[in-house]
Image (cartoon, rainbow, N blue to C red):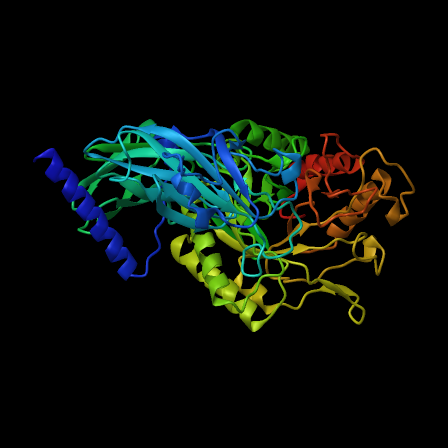
Length: 605
């Protein structure tokens, strides 16, 4: 077939597929396992323009025009001005941008070599919070959501040689955003994760989901989707197990198959086992390391591979406190996860949004269970249909990226939301989408509605939405936001008694190195924080269905929400570790608890 004609057929097929998806109401997604493809990183120094009054689109700065006659002039220039690191947030790169919320234009040149028989995609790991993307003066994509990836196809749009890429980024808080107007972490703006130019064949393995079949270690179920609708042979193999199987895709380019794996070893918390899985079709091969495990609940127990596991957890933000900026690299992931591992965890609740893929993949290699959630955190307008649609898309994007990461055991749909019919419908829509797409995980949400019932003398919660969840989690800051109504030795809980319950947040603030009365909350001292932890650990003995605990939080983190002039100064000081990396007294209490728990805890007993 003539190369020019082949190229035309490819473009026509892509257009037809896109139109069919649009007609079916489907959303454009992104390819699975982008790091396993042929890619060029577009990271580094990018030119930037701060656009406080949002004039850039009106001026068409994406055209990057320069004077060509004596009469021409333009009131902008990317060259010779501000330069920002990508990936990275702008807030930590320039003092003047510390609190900046608004628009920044990013731009760079890059070289391309498009060839017939290949397709090119521009992939963003994340841009915070909304963006518009221009290539060679043409708008090619836009995206909303600061913590999930997106891609756009460049096939037929790239020039041979120099290309000019412009990205308009805006992190302004709005009532219809997710998270909304107020949230207890820093509103970092920028291109915060890797930017990649990805090259694949015309026909390639676009998507796949590899998992155990029917909670059985002797068989693996694989779902495959090719980029273009076509009947063709697809082969899936696990070389180490010496198993391989081929199947013909249906006319829509999809296929399902089951591999027999009698010698498969399961991935377990603190004992990671991963296998190279290879998927191929004519002209394309993609592989990655995948682990296998199964999850279920049994009454108040959480079972991993049929065995009860008590979740020794902690949370952290996607932030390097010493750098006062977003975490984005593999080195950053090592820093965060090594400190969590030193505490003695077997689980991390990634707060309060999907974090970068380096963190997720490294945690899996370390045998650490993960809870991931989208930032449905207080203040969300549950009655707004547009906000609901955004949340559904973000949830799907989170699941799409990490569905092959066996370390992810919990999908979280919300944190600290108040009951209402609108809230219930909103969250139910997320559960329905999630369970339809991925029935292999446990679905959870964190509530902050537990109260002390003076008539019964018990801690209770009244939120019927909990009935829809596999695992219920509670944030409760006894001794900090809530004074003790009874001594910790008498603090008995009766909250969703028939389900596993995780204490997903507890703790209090202390300024590292500040010492004071362990009985005075306002001392902000390490001693008071330590006593608070001791009291909460005593209370946990009186929660019959306790399946795990997760103190808030591993590191002090930046937050304009916190403005005590002496003890906070734009930092949430609940960390077990200070912003400079020093461990507080409470760290050693939790470390000892987890050390003993790893020997003796079985679902809280």
